[in-house]
Image 1 (tube, helix red, strand yellow):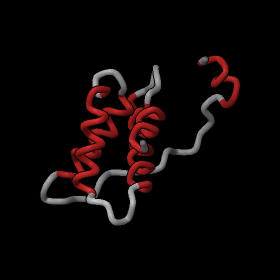
Image 2: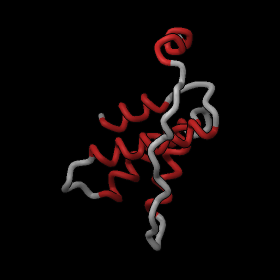
Image 3: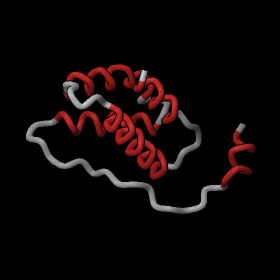
Image 4: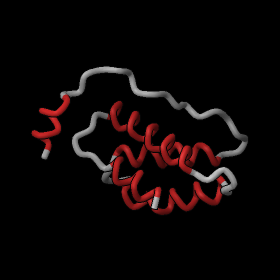
Length: 100
């Protein structure tokens, strides 16, 4: 259920490549933070990737999310390039209303 919520949040239209990467990173951090402490990371990562892979071609943020999952499973292990988005105005309520 958690991966479905994460993927739903990542499905957005008309994203710039930078914004898609930011959302993909946020989605990865949300998904990772919600995993139970005793879960098998590799199993959960493969399961999340398999659930998300159908959307890679159509949703750039989900593609960025999947890239992070693939990078996290590569050997030898190395740190992932994760960062919070830079603070900036994005249009607020008016832009959200216009997007509907």
